Length: 172
Image 1 (cartoon, one colour):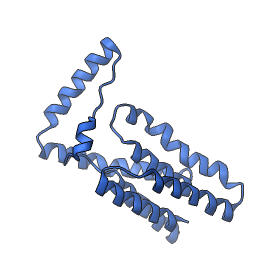
Image 2 (image 1 turned 180 degrees about the vertical axis):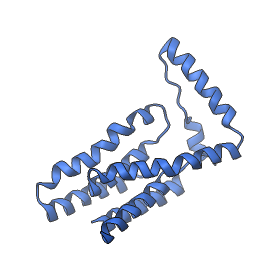
Image 3 (image 1 turned 90 degrees about the vertical axis):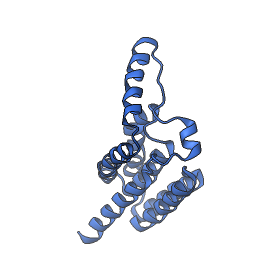
Image 4 (image 1 turned 135 degrees about the horizontal axis):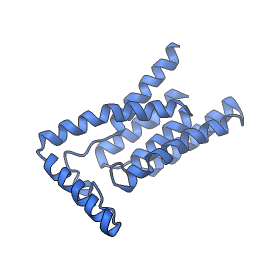
């Protein structure tokens, strides 16, 4: 089951690297496969575990999506992984992904000399939000469309985290 999750996650990773987005076809196919495999092997008792694994990423990551700190594809990928792994493994995957991504973001931003721009953004965000209640996106659409080199593909550390969980399951 985890191997199938790894295959779908690998397809999502490749799609993310090539197109800067994750296709809904990959996600929907993976969610359907997760449902069929888990219900087929564990019965209807798997449904609450699958749903928890799928909706925890949505609940946890939605604020980050609202501020454009995560893309919808990242959340969909976590949903896919969560349907296969369930709770609490999806929390571990999300934690390991963030733990691996934060230093990479910091190093990339330092190397591109854009820390100043993001600090300026943060000050502007606080000012606008406190006065107008407007949310300014952290990553702008034109940056995504151009495939800016400092954008981080979270699918890579998410895939690595899934592989770590897979190895842990196989060993013990």
